[in-house]
Image (cartoon, rainbow, N blue to C red; front, side, top):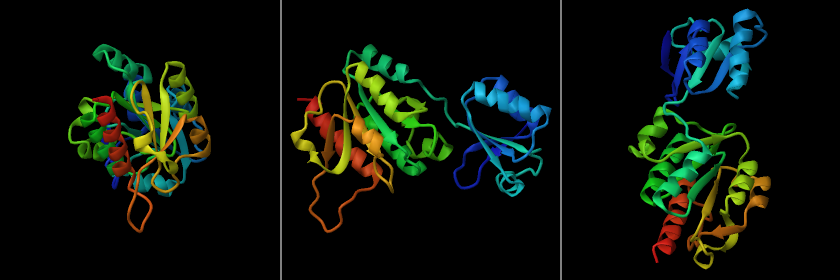
Length: 252
């Protein structure tokens, strides 16, 4: 089996048809697979079938893209991108809060693409007592080794769940009794919002912020007061500020 790291993101990748198929069958967590566009022979169809069973993203790409991802040159038209850490479920996160006898405190990330931001958010979430972090499957970074390194070990203690649809997940969390607050500059000042009790905090992507559909699902919009000439914070910094205001309120 050929296994290495994708350059830039340091994501673990597995190359070759047999190696990728065995990775699926062994139960490894595979974020996505890259398949040579137009290749539809038996082994590739079997891999695609396994990917669909696991709800793994399938990207059909040109040979040049596969060659770029490959270090061995022996990808045989298939490369899998593998999570550096195992994902939890949303149920696992809620169970962790219940085990501690605490109201759930969860971070929901809407399309965070920078691995350093994700790692920093997981690190701060652990320090602020959050029970877990939820990320989407698409248009977002997964649990790469860069994320693990930036989290400074927090990934070993703070569960991260990956979900197909953030908006639907928010509905499910509301059914469990959570209130959902989103961070956005045109909301109510965070000091004036009750961040105690069962809470989900939504942080948007670095470039586009929170998507319209996700924003519409939120109960509150919390803004962070700013006194300078620019009007936005890095996503991980915004998450940290909001987390610690929530922690301050929850410790009263």
